[in-house]
Amino acid sequence: MSTLTPPRSGTARPLPAPEAPRPPRRFRRGAARSRALLGALYATPTAVMVGLFFLVPLLLVGWMSLHKWPLLGAPTMNVPDNYTRIADNELVASAVWFTVKYTVLMTVLLFVVAFGLALLVQQRRRGVGFLRTAFLLPMAVGFASASLLFLGLLSDEIGPISDLLRKIGLIDGYVSWTSGSSESALGSAMVLVLWRFAGFNMLILLTGLQAIPLEVYEAARIDGASRWQTFRRVTIPLMRPTIALVLTMMITGSLLAFDQFWILTRGGPDNSTTSLVMVIYREAFIRLDLGSAAGISVALLAVLVVFNVIQLGVLRRRS
Image 1 (cartoon, helix red, strand yellow):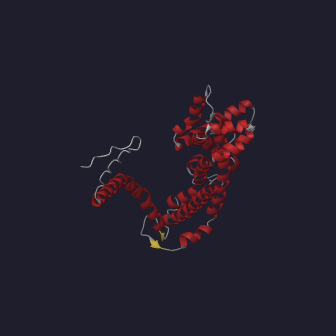
Image 2: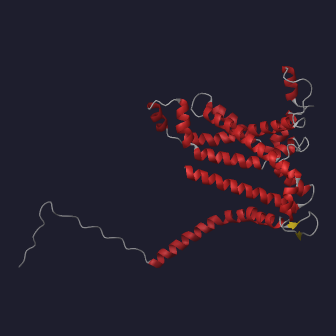
Image 3: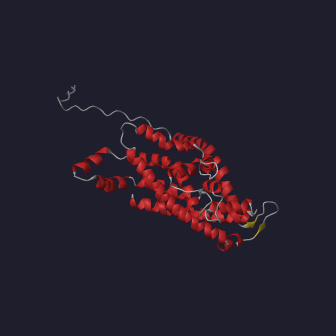
């Protein structure tokens, strides 16, 4: 009769726990299909909205750009007249030059002011909460309403700005800020955009600044870096994605400028402040040529797509 030998002390190992039985393959496939179907159902409302309010109008504009499409009457195919006439339109040429000039000036000025405000309110101290709210408050005003507000403030008849500057002694007589000269009209529009959007861009830049770890600044301080060196070699490189986003939004918004010039200056004086989107509006609703307006819109969209592709390429290469 054999006897069982007890295990030696210190050599016993616990038996591994039995593996849980895996569900059948058909069940796993069915669960995956259910999750995919549920995700599709969640995404369906957004997809319908994007298709209805973005893709369908985009395809319609592209189709209209291939036709002579009067506001009243049947459209006729005229490929590629709507595109070839863009180069012959003198108003388009002047609007392109003005839009590019406005975009460069506005982007530089708005970025400098917004970044300066973000640096000003970056650190927590007394009064910072009030300043952040005050800088962001103009965003609560609609852009068209803000344009009408500035039109009243800058009016040479009822506006208080001219009276105030005359009392101070900075101007003499009446000054037409929105139609007297191209420089004053452009400056008025830039001040409006700066007042309206500086706080919004400040908020985005402030989010990027607060995402930088404090340990990085402490390490730079220990290494003896000055404030300028820290800003140039630490803050700017780590802020590159946020800066790229803000610059893309600023440039795109400037290229599509319409409200401030249509309400404040009406494109004057002598079409010197006529933006490219204003030309599209005039082609569609004043000259009643929807096909020409669609052609200019498609060309402008192509420029914006190329710019965004280049911007994203530069961002990915440097990140």
